[in-house]
Length: 413
Ligand SMILES: Nc1ncnc2c1ncn2[C@@H]1O[C@H](COP(=O)(O)OP(=O)(O)OP(=O)(O)O)[C@@H](O)[C@H]1O
Ligand SMILES: [Mg+2]
Image (cartoon, rainbow, N blue to C red; front, side, top):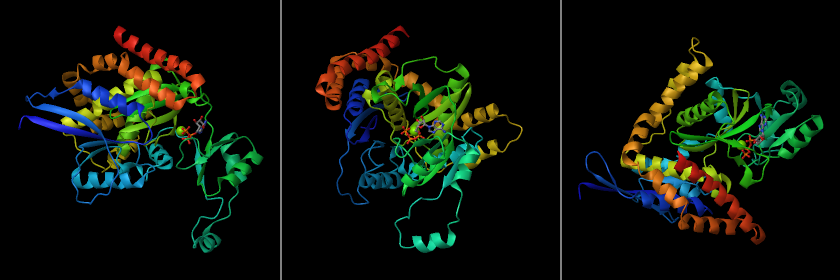
């Protein structure tokens, strides 16, 4: 039928059951969409399986949300084939992420004039597993004075892998003895030394397409308690700047589903971690913010599919650098100019208008879902799979309470 389009969102999943269940449920409740031309769009989700594929095999999903390819290379290569041969839209494209670890993001942000703490990359402590190592290092590795570098940066400082994630290998170094202990233990990890930012609050921004939620994050708390529900933990200026920086860097690299970490001191924003290809969206960590995250995932993937948005991995680096190099612009003026590029990239205005016209019923459907029995059953299964029996009732109450609070606030708004 010419006046009907079917779209498929593929989900590439690891061990998680919670958000995919919520995503499928909300998408189903959204139902068919009729666009301005009268064309009817059906958007469905399917969990993808892993199996042999010939490089010319057709790819069914128009869009894939990927939570797997960062460690499982068979589906990663399938994603690349899908992007190159079928134009499949990817959240995220492995092409934009594989070479873009923390280190690259620091470099790009420095180039844009953002406030990255001073950072030094030191060579490997231990031999790299390669037969050429002995000769190469003997001939070309220059001896260096680790203490002098640390003294320059000042104590305390942070030592962490250039491509880090999950706090693996991160240490706070208070003195010389700790510095040598940490470096000796780094083994075959490639390490940054980074100056410490004395910060007031830690902001974590979860971005999905042009949408960003800036949250008050407490890294020292246990997982279920890291995101505080607080709406005014930043000044309006700092809050807007955190969201803006996140959108800019995501647009710069072509990332669409990412979480970013910023240390906030007064109104100054210091980005420290910006390349999380597989951001955590578990209900057991996001709780209150979980309905927002899944709603945004539904909104953005539906928008991309129904409007036929195409994805490109070509980056517009030069356009950003031209702004960076314009000496007549202040820091704020540069952020404003970068934001305009980011909004162009994400079609922010068109997206918002489209959501208003095509998805006016979405908030109510999400509200019905998260206050109903299907959500509660999903939460129960997740809690049972995550916590020991004697803690399950406490955690059910905790997450029910927080998601319930979100739902109440939506009703009031
Ligand atoms: N320059 C810094 N100044 C102050 N604190 C820092 C700095 N760098 C890192 N930290 C602290 O160390 C933690 C881990 O650092 P970072 O985010 O860079 O590593 P990670 O491996 O990505 O960890 P995670 O996965 O928990 O985000 C941060 O959450 C922050 O509390
Ligand atoms: Mg981090």
